[in-house]
Length: 203
Image 1 (cartoon, rainbow, N blue to C red):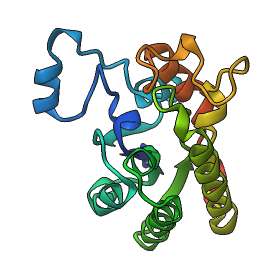
Image 2: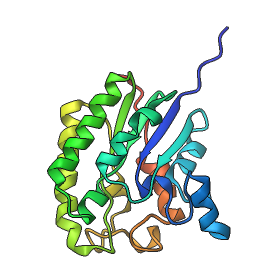
Image 3: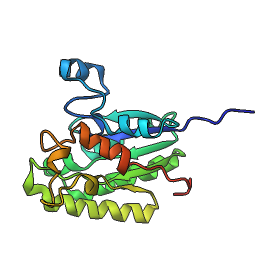
């Protein structure tokens, strides 16, 4: 009897995927992080613990916008069954059009499917360090929700999972250390609660 193939999930995104500030998949960045380096500072670490039957790969790069993330899709998709796409906050912080960012994400979904992959989207997290970006983040997330409906792909609720219910539009203080990125506790919530792999290959 042929053993079942281990599903491979590639996580493609920016610093939220990479694990900034305590982790990065790039060995050169790991060296710069030094003694603070901690692999638990990535949501895929916790998702893999919760789903040991799945192999996860980290393709996060700090500070990247959606266009840059999309340019790396083929690399991330190589050998993967599923690609989780996360991005958008850097488009907002860098003053780029959220409509263009959404177009980039839609193109990633389309290209991923053309490569024969299942694609999952995440929405944009709250960003405490840029309170002026709150409305743009909410607007971007509405566009991402529309993409998920149009393309019939699963949307992972990163925003709702870490939002502070006492301070809407902010990450809860228990889930971030720097206000802009999840802490280890925040990554654990994303990996254990926000991540899910649909049982139906057709989403």
